[in-house]
Length: 247
Length: 391
Image (cartoon, rainbow over all chains, first blue to last red; front, side, top):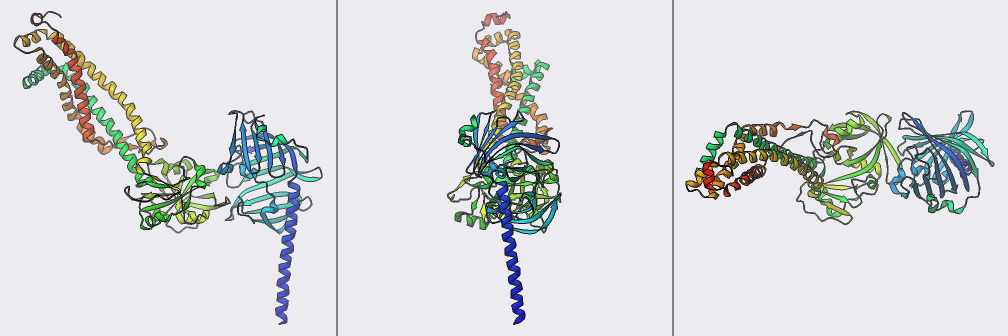
């Protein structure tokens, strides 16, 4: 009888520890979300697509408000200059100056790569907070470069999600993801994201370089570099309208 | 008429080399026209037979959303097997096929593909689907030679296949090429991967769902359920008919040039004959021939070129045409890139209608061309003609 009680206590302890750990993991994830999401931001950046034989760099300026609204204008190279993209409430429109037409990217076209990069329109569109779509647990601790990080296992808690499982390395001090592995439902590693050049901007930590890599494909991946970023800036309302695409 | 034929024959033989040159040129036209038309008929026959054997069977029923020219529609183009078709599937009269988009990564290259789920026990198509019924820890897959060529894959090769399930969640697994089949239908080969139907349904969480059904027989009577569209064999092979019609129109120009050359020679010969044989024409009229009979005599003489050409064409053309029907004509270009169901070697098919129509066309054209200059005879003064004076 006494042994049974001890066993029950140990079991309860293990379960409680697990729950506390899961809770802690969710707290970490929420802190990561707070760093990575903002009410609004204005950013200039460059995206370098490292192909098998050559690389090409595309620069852009973008405006974002919450997770629902975003506007991007491509500045270079000449072939892409003037191309604009507007995301509004889950819908995406693209304006191409060569055709002077606005087209809506919808349905399965969202799964196509953005300008030949390792990112799909859908990857760009999915700005949902990690804590909203994944459950998390801390599986260990590791060093990423010279930074100490928690290793977190994320499992989807919603069905409409591209990556069923993620492994996330989160900076213990700055609550910034340093590395992210995206897995298929069957466990195959599909994509890897590595964040670097973490800087403090307006009181929050933010990675200024992100390397996206399709792990099944040859090539050096897509490198995303933030040139300038401002949070909680005033963005005129007309930016997030279809009329702004042709201006 | 008999006398006219006799006279015509004598005159033609008497003309010697001039006649034979005309006959040889005309016989070439006969053989080339029959051979080229035979190739077209053979292509039509081969394309439709191969499409039937490898892709469309006796016709298909498509999901309303399915558009083979728009891979973006694939994700929505599926539905459960309708009750009205369930019995046909059960009895083997209908073959369900599920098609989804996927990506393969042979040697790190990203290749978008259409993944087709087929029943390994199917017997409607010549696809060696039974090879999918094998024990392997990877997904067994079949590909065509054209697909194998473009992706540089061979039997036994393994690579990752990535796809999305019904919710859009990525999944990926290793796939093994169990066999490479050879077919001439590009739509059944290029960019297509065949895996077991139930495996694909399981992978995509589309249990019991289908994109299209293929009929075993063309005359299978079915009620087409709502949300599905019937595509008859005639509709599915319309593209072949249209292409062959276009090609035939192009060929007709060549036939026209060939006939024009032959007819030009016959026309010249007729003009020369009438010019040189004025005394003979006058004699015929003096002997009691009407002008019409003399015109008929010369027309028969000209038309006999075509009869002789047909005989000569039979002499050397028949063995050639039979040899071609047996050995076929191998095209010097790689036909796999044509985007049409076309075999590298085409076997001409000669129908009775084809041969008779060709003979009739050449005979009638020759008769018209022979009659045309002969009309001059009707305007001749017989006395002047007898004297051999130029008119």
